[in-house]
Image (cartoon, rainbow, N blue to C red; front, side):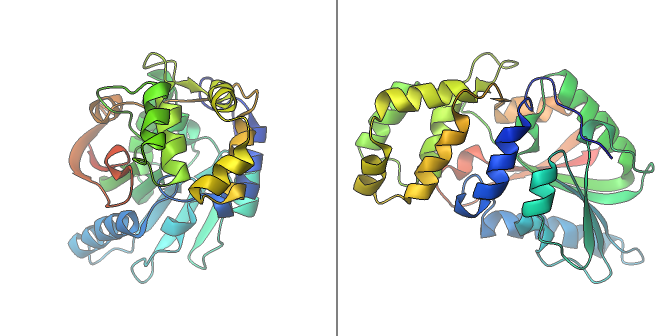
Length: 281
């Protein structure tokens, strides 16, 4: 399967090539925590408990290692689909029960009703509103069994938006602990209208205007220098990330999916990274 560029969110494959190399320095909330993995695992276990005569056929949207290597029921199979070959080549952990391929979530050439559970981490951030998400939901419903389940951890901007200045003020006041929580708040603070998202190059411009010496900035806060330098991948990037509110995220998958439940972890910024569970409508 060949990846096809997502018109709004995924415009610069080099960004994801760099992310693949930097993945080991990325931490929560950009990666799922143990709390999140427990939610994914509980959903899969619940599905298996209700369908004891069937073996779980899992679909992973992306190559998130924490999900791929979690405890799956005996006999489960897993296929992961990611648009980025570098992510597949460098991040996919190659579990014995699974395989990964490059492909477009909106046009996955998988047989109808061939998957029982689908799990994803941050998928909606990479899909345009409304076209990309509608195509994603429509194709995903086709692929899932009628009694299947979908769990997505969604990166959600708050109902009351922050400004970049407020994010930096919170940082100076000691109200932000982790670098990646700070970065995600800054990215969300620069969000345009719901369908516009955040241009990553604008995040770099804002960051570099405020922080002239990132090495000293990292040292003063006790943040890993390599993690702070990971922001450099945003420089001049036209890639856009879309952060919907929680309610917008739910609505963007209607009428193909019906919300089932919502879960949040206990880590910093977890309230903006809920796992939303759906059933095919």
